Image (cartoon, rainbow, N blue to C red):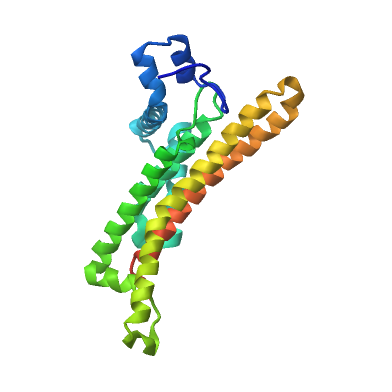
Length: 248
């Protein structure tokens, strides 16, 4: 339920304003309660539309949209394969989709009356959990159960490997590290985007006096939106690199 002022520390968004305008209407109030899901679905629809129109008419001489889509896809493939090697190409669709999805959600916070879904921990945690489970699945598939447990026991071991204490200690340390990764990954993204959103809201309260700072903050927020998407996907790619088999 929405009571009193809808906006407190963040800029007003469309769903919050609708909930305030139609107070008591269950439909708009539920939209406001689930606003991060609604905005996530909206961004998904926008990306799907761009991908559809970009790939609808493939030609040897691409248009602007097709050329932009191809450049982005090629850049993401080079980014992933540069870390994981040629065999990492099968992870490009997943990591590339993550990057585009997070980037668009981050940038939506700069559009008037929209709100970045990545400012909610529920959104970023869901994305981080997708990465976590896919990494663990890939590790079990590539290494097998025995190889995965051996990976968690840590290397190099040397002569001390004959002692069960050190490998067991390393096993629990690595296990704790794996479980912490979704928390650190999700909180880093959420905190940075939420902080930019709050700062933007504070600067707008200064009116025209705060315009220079607001203008500068818009550029810094734009840069932060790109950087945070890159960092999230870079760390995700590194998580895959750590658990996959390596060619000596």
